[in-house]
Image (tube, rainbow, N blue to C red; front, side, top):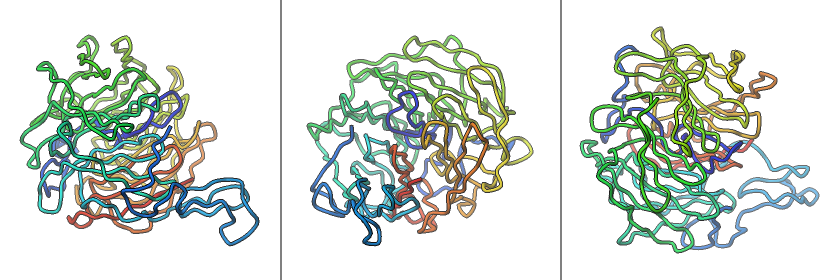
Length: 438
């Protein structure tokens, strides 16, 4: 997303990890994005999982080939060369939960939180797990009287290291016909759940975009059973509030989104059957929308990211087809991005494939996405690229090693590694997972 994790200024912003604004296939086997118009402080755990039984299981402090000792502590399965951890893709250990697609996910510190989703029998799930890339260890999450009911396409938001909780909200039943406006809060320290307070004024939301603004969780956009949802619902760990309608873009879907702390940027998208090129920002602390200068052309499904100082918008789809162009915005000024030779034109298939995030200040990455407007699962990309904003340079991210599409899988940037796990391969849910480090 999105995408996930701590959205403080300069931290990664995703379009898929914490949820994605726009429509999606909410049934058990459909392949197309329903709703797309016809115009085109980290948790550490040492037991209860797999892949190791100590906090440092699998971690490397020595040379990858038995060379000189290395002062850098690397994540599991990564050697250390010259005080630098090895980059690229590595496989993840087997998860202690069933294979699934359409699960809620978010970076919880340097770990990955996964809940719910759809199993191979077409049933919604009410369980999940935490995964720690540092140790390659999984920990099943508890199910208790406060945990969320079974659901797909819910949104998860981490509250930051100070409180270390995850809020799971919304989603649908397995068929996608019943949309929820409830959820629960997972407390890592207590390893328990508490049901969210009910509020009849909340919107029913599936696949909303979620982020933590430092004080409250914000759930923006998404779908009800048949259309996009306007506005945002906000939860401060005590009570709910609903965003003002003043300046809100309305029933907007498929927009590019990025977050800088309490400020959310939105570009493009579709209202009804008309693509947009408008650019807006939303400040959750003051509950105010602002209209910004237009920059990128009208488009839907573009990748959006925050690099620490710039709002980055790349790719997507216009009336003529897929795009490989983009722009970056500093303040209120837009600048053209160079055309990549290492990344094909593509768009995000919301919650289906496509993630954007900050690798480090000034560098963003785009991975996955849909390389055709046909909707076929065979058109899902498994590669990506990094873009350095100041120099305009692109660097290829190779295809992940399993070559599975991870359709409707989770994609989460932890601040150190990008984790892609689960989803479907040829309409069969998979337990395969892999991690990329720059």
